[in-house]
Image: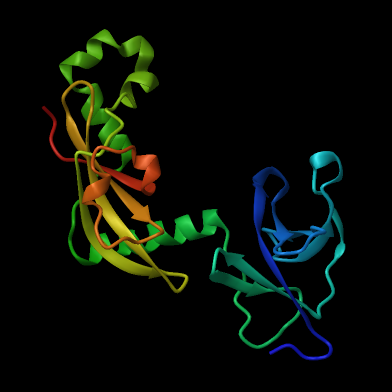
Length: 216
């Protein structure tokens, strides 16, 4: 609840800059836009400006400012430099992906589900007879896949920072004929994924792991 000493500002994510360890946000609904930075290392909030396109830190945001970070109609976080009830710090995309991978790995181990990491996937491709003709284009050939999902299966839904995330097994075909699947995290869960078969994986989810289904 907002008091006389507090001010709530609605903002949305504007851009990320991993090199300078910051996320930049912009106010929502105001004619005059204001910008704020959140340091991804300390979690501290700063005033900033789009001047020059660099969004450098200015001065710290007052502790009585409460940020409501939104995406459309959804409130993603309630954050700021002060301590207040119901504070829910903003979680970066990188932190969310790392946590999703950690939780899914635990799920695989707890349920005895075998998987192969990306290095095993590369080794399987390099053992294919067709690889001999493409050695000089190693990395390019390894990632030469059809680019479209052949089948999609929901493996499990887990809570990641209090938000549901679907973990999927998405089957692909490599140009050499090898069939493999990628375990992926869909951060916007859907009731069904069959309508996405034939579409690029980047339209669907963030890849977490690779697992070979068969060699050839």
